Image (cartoon, rainbow, N blue to C red; front, side, top):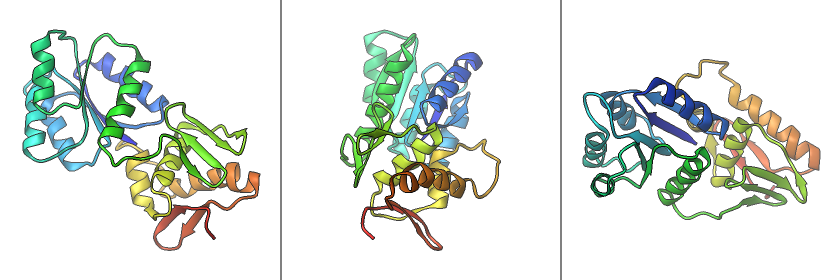
Amino acid sequence: MRLLVVEDQPKMQRLLRRGLQEGGYAVDAVSDGVSALHQATEVDYDAILLDVMLSGMDGFEVLTRLREAERWTPVLMLTARDSVPDRIRGLDDGADDYLVKPFAFSELLSRVRAVIRRGRPARPVVLRCGPLALDPATRTTVVGDTDVPLSPREFALLEMLLDRRGGVVTRTELLDHVWDSSYDGVSNVVDVYVRSLRDKIDRRFGVQLIHTVRGAGYRVTDSP
């Protein structure tokens, strides 16, 4: 899952970015409204965390322009303003949720998961394929009754494959949604992580769930 954080306070931006990355998300971050509008119209994000108090163009205006441009990415507004009129304005302008600073990071993660779920077609709470089960809420993965520890990147990649169970997910789609725009590493990073997932799931448990679709990408299915 790939998120955009719009926050003009450097310390808060760093905290949000680090915490969300530790939660398994790929995160891009900008510090002003103009940059936010550009990023949000050029990249398909799973959700946007949008601060209200921004220089040049505030969060309300960014949100209004996004909705006018028919960009329906879920938006969670973050603000120190606790007045009811401000919250009403944000929701009326098209925000999906509104969180007042300061907040517990566990609540932020819960609300991010909630707005992403609301902005997508209905899907099971726990994603399954054969003996494999992945729970996005608890960040756990099991095969049968055995817990399978995964790194945040491995978890995010497997979650996307399971979310599209049976369908082909291209390497570009995986790279775009699991890694953020700052990534400048090896070009075969997706293949490296898929190999790691196969070691931890397919080879360890003697199953064949992660399939390569030659020339296209990868697919998770329990069918041959």
